[in-house]
Every structure is written in structure tokens, then in C-alpha cells.
Length: 201
Image (cartoon, rainbow, N blue to C red):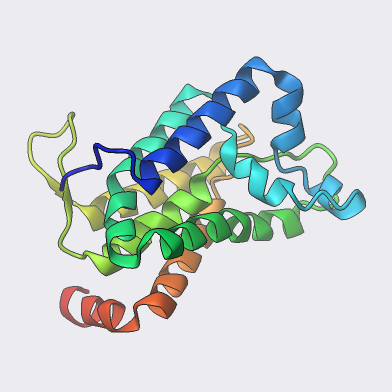
């Protein structure tokens, strides 16, 4: 599978996330203003945080892991859905993936969350349903691996960190994002999704 090498919508989207994340590391008040704080959503009506939290990350590892995954899957989704529906999928998934955690943590004044994990998971599972035969060539592996294997590993990693982590990264958002991305992809392209489910799973 070839990754995009030109200024496509996914590449520009990734660039925006990288720029905002880096600025957030440099300018701490900016990061604080953007992250998801469920108590602020409930008490101060900061609904914008459900969106802006998807453009900031905890550290370089968090950012690179998400953007690396998005880089290899987003082009496949954009090619199948087009720019507009791809952006609808990604942007809405940022918000939707944060909702379960927001509802659960609304009374926890010490809780904050950030990261594009939910939207990335939505795009990843969308790509699998639209292109079930896709494979990834990764630098640290000698042979290409099926996209669904990477996606399952991505979710397994998130499950592990959800269980043990206190890093503020919303690993639970991977699950809600994956489910939402699959449902919206079916809404956009039901025939392709049904074909994938019937012939590959």
C-alpha cells in the first residue's frame, strides 16, 4: 500500500494536528485551553473541547503513533469516500469518540483527556471495511502485514493502556471511534461494507 506523497486533504489534516500539538507543548496555556475537561463541558459549556482535544497530544510518542497510523490509512478512505465525506468522518469521529468518556468523567474535577485516537481508529476501521485486502509495509517488519492485523493490534494496545495508564491519553476513545467509524462507513457505502463482511470475515 502506498502512502500519500502530495498535499492531499489527509496530509493537510495531519499537518494541522502536528502544528497544533507542537504549539501546545510550547505554549502551555494553549494546550490547557484545548484539552477535554469533562467538568468544564458540564459546568462551563465548553463543548468546543470535544473537538479541539483531538488536535493536541501528550508527547511525541503519542503524536507520532497516531499520525503514523492515520498517514497509512487515511488516503485509502479519502480515495473511496472523497474529500468531503472523509472530513465528515474524521471530524465527527473526534467528537463522538470523546462522548462516552466525557459522560463518565463529568464529575471528576481532576480528569482531562486529549488526542486524535478516536478519529484515527474510525479512519482505520473505515479503511479496512472499504479496502479489506490492503497491506502495510512497515520499516520494522520484513514483510507487509494485513491492515486488519495492524488495526486489531492498535486496539489491543489501547485496551492495555486503558487498563494500566494514567497518562491523560483517552485510550478508550479507540473503541468508540472504531465502532462509530464502522457504522458511518456503512451509512456511506453499504454495498462495499456488506461485500467485505461477506467475503473477508
